[in-house]
Length: 239
Image 1 (tube, rainbow, N blue to C red):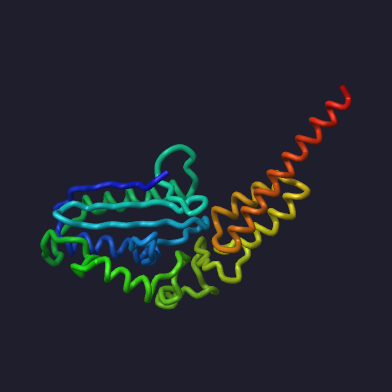
Image 2: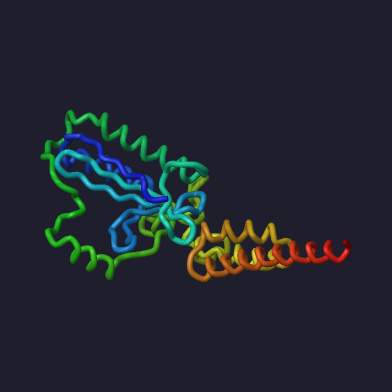
């Protein structure tokens, strides 16, 4: 549990590092959002998982923090046992980004100074972030509408492999209501399937959908416990 955190001494000009990071954030469709009071970048990947990224650059040292949103809203790092596809792909993406920053050629680029985090323009960062949060903060979703329009990627012509999920009107998307409903139904008759639906839904949903998935999981566990208790009691009567 936690975050992937790393510091790399680059000693590159600020504009070089900023260019690489802005290119990475744009082409990977990250959005600026709020995570428990922190200004971070996020995206919902093709597996329905939320990726989060935070970076800074000061004194020639690049600092990056990355994590996935785990079950029940907890942070999940990019290392350890049980690496899923989202975890593995995000870590590989971060590794490529770090390699690009280390080997970035500065020849022919505008010169600059080794400066500070370009996101912290104001000396009163906390007040600036709170003002942005109240005005613009949005949940982590797929590619924002303004970027889809700019790239010509509307719902009808998204490239293969990109779902552009926003969770609106999608029972198995960001809201996860479909997982919750199926989990409750299966939880009564086939509790093992109910547990699977509940776990999958909790990882992929939020709001009402997450609550339904948690209920489905609880019902399924109780059903299994009832079956076990029944067979114990029934077996005892036969002895």
